[in-house]
Length: 103
Image (cartoon, rainbow, N blue to C red; front, side, top):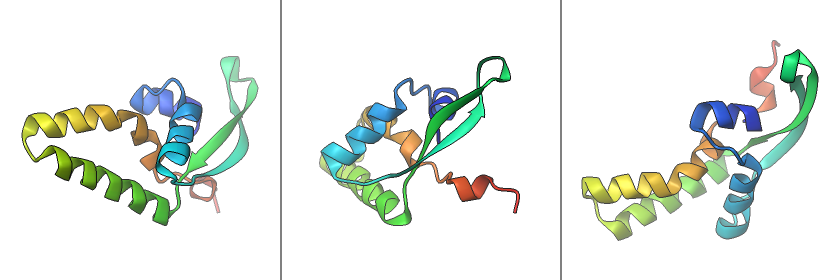
């Protein structure tokens, strides 16, 4: 997922900060690769595409489950958890550069 996809899909205005939080506060690494995409008026712009490998996605799922367990399973506590974890949603996307290739 790149910054424009994060903005469009989950209203994350600062994807670079989101992935930094995942890496630095949780110790969950991410992958990244620069790519050129159409930007303003279809002019080329370079952005970073971020993605998590399977192990990293599993680590985030475990973290979410542990937080949910600590909060209990009521609807309100689960909603609070989802709101708190909103910033991590973009990083859970399983979109990698090879997924986008035609071949």
